[in-house]
Image 1: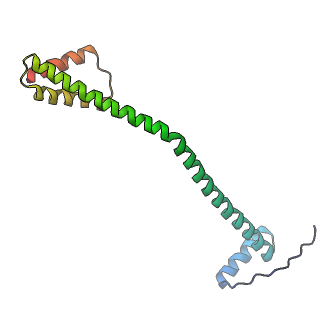
Image 2 (image 1 turned 120 degrees about the horizontal axis):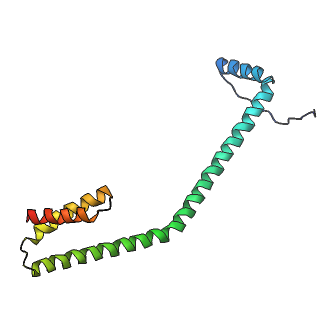
Image 3 (image 1 turned 90 degrees about the vertical axis):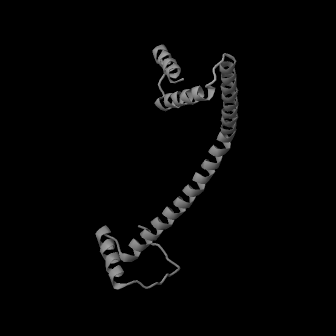
Length: 143
C-alpha cells in the first residue's frame, strides 16, 4: 500500500457522545478514526454532488418534456374549443327543430336530455338501441 501524504489539517470539536459513536463505527469497519472520517467525508461530498446533478437533470428533463408537449396541449385545447362550439350549435339546432315541430316544452326536454347525457358520460358505457329507445320514451313520458 502506498503511503499517502496529507498536507492539510481540519480541526473541529464534537461532543463526547459523537466521538464515541465515531470510534465505534470506525472499529466496526476495521479502520482508524482518521481513515474512517476521510471515507465518510468523501462519500458525503459525492452524494451531495450527485444530488445536485440529479436536481439539475430533473429540471432539464421537465423543461424538455414541457416544451415538447406544449404544441400537443395547444392542439387539444383548440379541438376541445371546436367541440364545445359544435355542441352548442347542435343544441341550438335541435331546440329550433323541436320548436318548429310544435314542441313548446323545449327547455324541459333539454334538461332531461342533459341529465341523461351526463349520466352516460359518467358511466362511460356505450348505449345500445334499447337504452336509446327507453331514454326517448322516458323523455316523452316526462313532457
